[in-house]
Image (tube, helix red, strand yellow):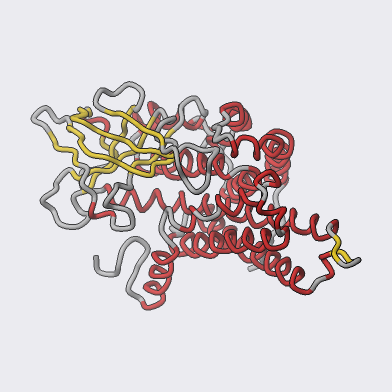
Length: 394
């Protein structure tokens, strides 16, 4: 079978349009927005206008109907400009909307997915808790079924991207706390702006992604009608893992954009900056840094495109996406570190923008599965202990 890495005309058009958006609207204000901790709603409106907020959602549900190579290109270009905006794609599109596309019923898709796909409503993803990150089964949030078929939701979700901004949330809670492990978890739709019993907060102090929104969701006797349940009771863990396959893909694709940004800025600086009568690009150590970025960019992009190919074929890509997420996010942080070394003191200056990539590239190594979780997954696949979703025999 022939392997063709050329982009289709549509994919090229999408890449060019998003690149122009980043060059003309995102990058000119990126450093200022970051230093001011400003969430730029004008840029989110621009993403909506381009169809980015529903790019891989089929047109019959209000989206643009693009494939996953196009989605990867979008995430690469967007994070080349600003990590906070790619984070929005991850939670709104990857974790929430694509999860609804694969798991919600038709009525739910019309009510919740369509306005998200058009960008009319923004969405987030409520899985992590103060004591339940990688250990999803340790969650304490509960949704207890009532006699009338409704559910009462109580608990807290933490480190939720766009918690304080989003209109909708896909929230996971234990409908049967007596069942051990993850088998008693279910998924629910929450209207963050109109449901009574839900409050949100925003974190003021973070290491990076200053131009974005991260916070907590609090549920206090929030009554949810029966039609807010996504899938069946007890399917929440399966749905969450399905969601993470999509979310991790967008994270990996965005990391490719960080590597490229660091490479482009480093090459430019190395061709301008002179020491002892020579451009620093002639120095072997600087060339070593740049060569590593080139290798990291090409490797990470190929892994992302491999996962995208599987997604386009409708094939479960848990293993491929996990590998891409692990390799690309580690490579992005390494590239940002190397870019700082090349720029020296100038890189340490926030106004040059290099330090922003360094700070922002640290979080993706943690969220949506730490590097250590993904290494474990890859090892267990190799050992034959893991099959797609969960361990063999579970």
